[in-house]
Image (cartoon, rainbow, N blue to C red; front, side, top):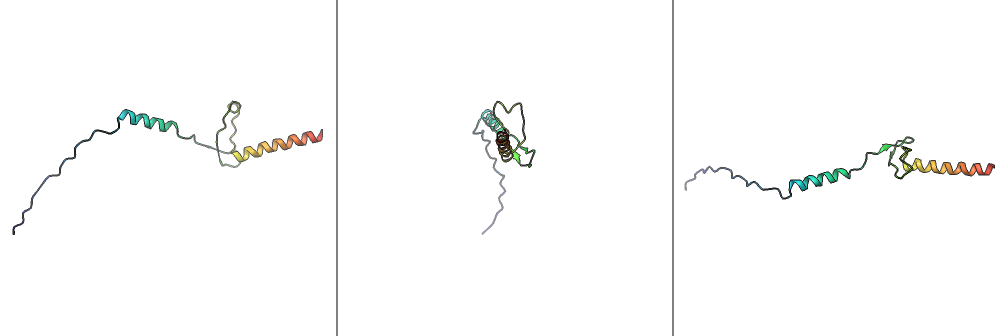
Length: 88
């Protein structure tokens, strides 16, 4: 029995065309970038992340409060209103 070493070159892989058109892929990438959330600012009181307020009255006043501190502020306003009416 004789053994022989056979040298063979590597076969080249065929170049495939992309499955998705590059224009469609670029449009998809841009649409995902637009949906990224806005970076949350820290709360001015406790330092937790706060979500931006939405609505017509919030554009003039920019408060950096988390939802807990915002609710505490609202309840403090209500308490002060009740105390004012009790003193009258």
